[in-house]
Image (cartoon, rainbow, N blue to C red; front, top):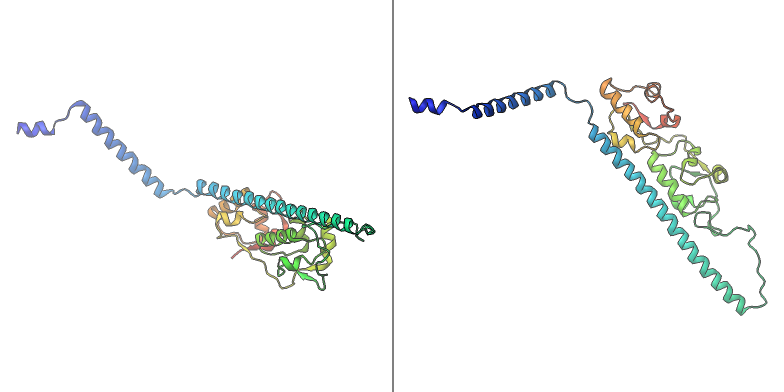
Amino acid sequence: MDNFKKFLSFSRGERIAIITIVSLIVIILIIKYLLVLNPPKRDYFKHDLDSIIARRERVMDSVRIADSVEKARHVVGTRHATSEKSEKTYRKDNPSHKEVPHPSGVRNDNLTHSVSAPIVREVIDLNVADTTILQQLPGIGAAYAKWIVDYRDKLGGYCETEQLLEVYRMDTNRFNDIERFVKIDSVFVPNRLRINSDAFKVLLKHPYLEYDDVKKIVNYREQKGMIASWEQLQKILSNGINPKLRYYIDYQ
């Protein structure tokens, strides 16, 4: 009996350790119970991570564009140097030759329409044309054609010809030169964002939505429910929403 009592007795230090362990277990159980009753409504880390990934993709797109421009300039420079060398050789062998200026007075550029490129014979559908067809447009070379297609993919398709002005390095003069040669098919339906179900990072990839916009959309649908109309979305995004975004929203 004495041995049993001795087995059940604890020193002061042991009692403190047991009480501490039991207290920690009770606290953990309480916290777990509270989390089950009130789960967090937002995953802040996930949203921030999605933003970082999307911004990284945008930076990489800019780097790829800059790299393609640099390569284009290198190719043009090489061709120009070769052309000058051939011209000098020709002049040396033909001293009586007189230089005749190009009627346009403009040198070719990889970013612009080539003199030998085919002439536009019909209006081009912006949502169907590939880069080869787009290069038939005046002032549109390989680089511009690629930028037009890349931006079309990010948008989900062009709904207005004026959206070409949003393409990288597109200016008003160049757009005015090609506007009469391009069209949008009247029955065209763009790829749309499912505003009530698409993930944070999917919404963030669209050119017309910024990080704060997507955060407001996700918070609203998690706390108040579905977004049912363009007017409702305008109220949620009260900071100057792009009116063209209405073409790309599905409320189902």
